[in-house]
Length: 395
Image (cartoon, rainbow, N blue to C red; front, top):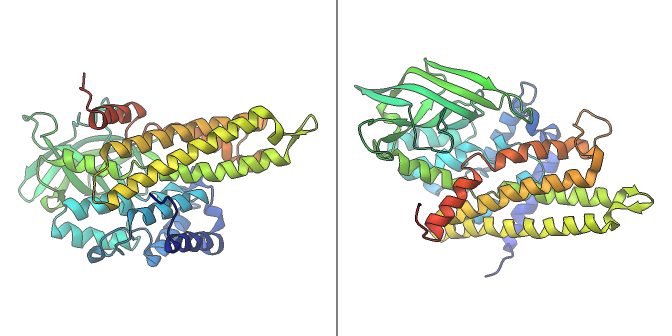
């Protein structure tokens, strides 16, 4: 296998880099903590539209649905490069082009495709996903949110917890229980719901790393959803949800973040002296950075292997879990290493004039914890690898 990018892919990578450095609002770079704030959200929306005009976020979609038919490897290059330069997640791993859009393409009716794909492709709608429920933890099938059909509508009642970006979202895609008398996994249906619907209320949740407006509880109180907003078949939503989750588990964004931080931490170590000796020439620090460089490259290859498998028409279920597990745990480990390299300066936040790298390490460390939790905890990923990859029994 040739691990190098093609000439065209290298040119595309350079084009992305040039676009970010010359045309993107520079205040968006490394602004994850405040990217949902009133001050920056307009710039996030405008940037998403500019990217959509380039056709990049949906370039991996089929041409007939507004995409370019590009390879998944090329799309991974885009995500990695955006993350490398510090684009917020609302841009880098945009839920619309990367999760719900491909899900509608695969499972949705012609009505859903005509209604929702064009505004996603043009960057006009922002989506969030609503899976997790109170008391369910990682048991995604323990859905208590109920959807009862009433003529041409479903009436939805229930609660979704820890929903990222809900306060900014135009639409949410959710699992709801449509058949409570049936066995687990055969009682769930998949819906797209307008966040402006009567009966939806939000309650904000604080995050450890202080991201503003990022996390919410979403309450559904007799929310009327048209029958046409059902994605796939009734009571077959579990399969739809599993396929959606697989799309977000490659973890290439963590690789981009780690590659960028490795470069900057290495430069910092070379430029900073302790006891008359450059930090870069301290054996422990050199060894730690070398170890992380190897792990980052291993995670990068794992993520691109997932993209390669998709380009071959395969469904990389356990391979995606492997990549997500490796990259998320690598990122958490690396941010800890970066804190050690910076010493007492590491925990300083961006508003401190003494904070190295504008406080990026502190913010990265706090945010890295989430990477091993959302879209399936590390324990869940290990179960998938064991059962689907190694064929081990559930118990």
